[in-house]
Amino acid sequence: MIQLTGSSLSAARLSAIAAGERVSLDEKALAAVTANRGVIDRILAEGRTVYGINTGFGQFATVVIPPDQLRQLQLNLVRSHAAGVGEPLTKPQTRALMAARINCLLKAHSGIRVEPIQLLMDCLNQGVLPVIPSQGSVGASGDLAPLAHMALLLVGEGLAWDGDKHIPGGEALAKAGLKPITLEAKEGLALINGTQLITSLGNLALHKLQALMGLSEEIAALSLEALQGTRAAFDPRIHAVRPHPGQIAVAARMRELLGETSEIAESHKDCNRVQDAYSLRCIPQVHGVGRDALRFAGDILERELNSATDNPMIFTDTEESRSGGNFHGQYPAFACDVLCIATADLASISERRQERLVNPAYSDLPAFLTQQGGLESGFMMAHVTSAALVSEMKGLANPACVDTIPTSAGKEDHVSMGPIAARKLLRAVDAFEQVLAIEARMALEGVRILGKAPAAGLKPLMDRLAAACGPWQDRAMYAEIESTIEALRAHTAR
Image (tube, rainbow, N blue to C red):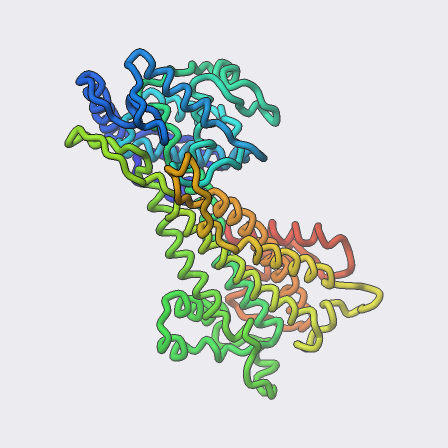
C-alpha cells in the first residue's frame, strides 16, 4: 500500500497505483486538510465575499451567491464542467488521475473537507472508477472537464466502469457499499481545479520512458556489434572536453556494455574503416541529450505531482484566500513536449541503425538479414514499419504548448494545451518501444549471422532475446515483434 502525503508521490509510485496498488492517507496531511477547511468555515461565518467560495466562476466572478444556494453552486459547477468528449481514459490512467488529485488535495490549500478525499480514496481502492473522456481540457484553469467527470462520481452521478461496460455512478457506488456526498462551499471547485490530467498522464509516460532510455543504449550497443563498429568514439577524453552530463553518462555506459573488446571486435580490428556513421559514432551525443531532457522534464513532472494547483489558494496560517495561476499547465505541458521531441529523436536514430542493418551497402550483412534473399524477404517490412512509426512520431513531436486559444470570454486568454501534449507523449512512448523492439530483433539476427560472440556486457540482453526469438526464417513478423517487446519488458524488469 502506498501512502499519499501530498509531497512524496513519484512517477514510479503513480505507475504502481495505476497498475492496481492500493493507497492510504497520511494522518498529518488529513489534520492539515481539516485545519484548512476551518478557514472556509470562518470566511462564511463572517459573511465575507470571496471568489470561488460564494461567488460565480470565471466571467461570473462578480456574481455573489447567497448562503442557501452554495451547495447548488458547487453541484452546478461540477455538472456544467463535465463536458468532456472522445475516448475515455483507460482504467490505469483513471486510477493515476484520481491518485494525483488526492495527493494535490492533501497539500491542504484547497479548502476541502476530509470526507470527499476519503471517498475518492475508497473509490480508488475498491475499483469504483469514473468514466473520464480524454478530450475537453485546454490545460489552464486546470483540467476542469476531466476532473469534473471524476467529481460527478462522488455525488452519485456521471458514469462509472463495470467491467467493460458503463453504469451510472450512483449505481457503482451502491454496488461497492459507498454513499455519495453533498458538496459544501468551495468543494466542487477544489475537486476540479488543477493540472492532474496532464500531470498523471505525463508521469505515466515518464516512468515508461525512463526504462526505455536505458534499454535504447543497450540495443544501440548490440547494433554496433552487429554492424562491426568501433569503440573509439566512446573514449572518455572526447566527452570530457564537451562535458554535457548526458553525453558523458551515455559514453560511459557504452564503454561498460562493450568492454575493451569482444570476439566480434577482434574479427575486424584490422579493417580499413576509420570512422562509423553518425548513428553509431554519435550515440553519446544523441542519446545523451535525451537523458538530459529526461532529467529536466522528469524533475518538472514529479514536482508538479506534489504541488498545490488550485485557485483560489487557501492559507491556514493567515486565514487568507488568494487568487493566482497555479492551475496553469504550462510547466507539465512544456515537459511533455520536451520528452516527445527527445523520444522522436531517439526513435529516429534507431531507425537509421536499422537501415544499416538491413542494407548491404552499409554492412557486411546480407540484404534484409536473410541468407535466402528472394525466397525470403527477411526484415524488409519490419524496417518499413519502423519508418512509419518514426514518421508519425515526428508529427507528434510538434509542440502543443506553443498553441493557445483564449477561452471563458477572454478571461483565460493564454492556455497550455497540456492534455494534448501528454496524450501525444503517451502515443510517442508506445511507438518508441515498438521501434526499439524492431532494432533489437534486427541486431540479434545480425550477431547470429556473424557467428561470433558480442561483448560480455550484452550477454543478458542477447540471452533474453535469443530465448524469445529463434533464428530467422520468414514467418509472421507481427508475432516476432510482439515476442521481442515482451522479452525486452522482461529484461528491463529484471
